Length: 138
Length: 281
Image 1 (cartoon, rainbow over the protein chains, first blue to last red):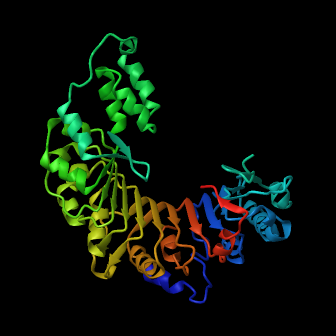
Image 2: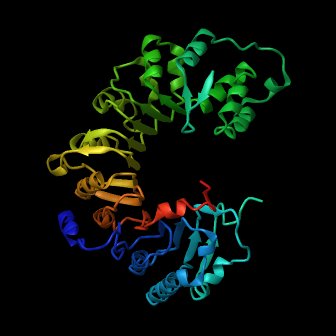
């Protein structure tokens, strides 16, 4: 079985550790350590079929000025679509999108609300930031 | 007397062990209101200090009645370096045997050879074992592993060189193993000829900081084992080309509840070179 699985990996997949989670039916939490939601990461999230999924965590290496809607809108769309698709098959959890930022920015603008970056998803799930947050040391 | 190692665990130098042997009754028993506290209350207080070794060290000097309770916390985690091991071997004592019964986590560093030692018999409550650097795996299996075979729940292999056959034997040896961490290690040969696991590997599997060539080999080998892990954490050096670990994820597909990945993201260096960005962790 394992060799068969190995053979199923598309050799042309550009630089993704994992390309699908469709078989992981018990998955509750997915943690991604990355800069931005790349197309591959979006594709990975889209492939989730687990009705137990409760949390998707991003640990982004990101600077504050990159918190702009156009960069995160594909993720917003993907998460929104994911919740819609799962709810169509008796999904009864509130999906949480959690950020655990790895970087902080010394001179940071204030007033950016990550919740506002996900206008579609926030209607169906929850967005939160934990630990260090994005606020600089005063 | 005590020293904290750079990884935050509590390391004891040979002189410390010697000091404790030579001065088993070095604490004067004198009238003091603090000694009047019931031992269960003292124990409750000291339980809150398990992560503060300096405070525990001070508490152990308050009174004899506090010493034993403090030692339980002080010796929960021990680093075994060649120097410490040498001291154990050369100066065995009942006191050391007594202290080692508190050890729950043991980290071995560059321990090329281990021989039977009376002290080791006290490690029968060990739960976490970390093998780092050039460690004589076979001798550790021979002399140490039987002592804590049924209690060990966590095994970490970091910067070790090991054959697949030995690796499988090591993992299979501990029936309660629920956390396996592989980091920067080299698994030699192919898993093709190694014996199969007698039971599936369950719990948490961490694979971190491998170069792509080693990672590919490990992915191939692990995916041939019986995996029923519920937690997977797979990260790599971000400045290296990625390896594909789909087979491991797929092998755990029915049991996996939490997956942590370093996705393929590029240009990390360009961000780290920004002057306005600093790491917080």
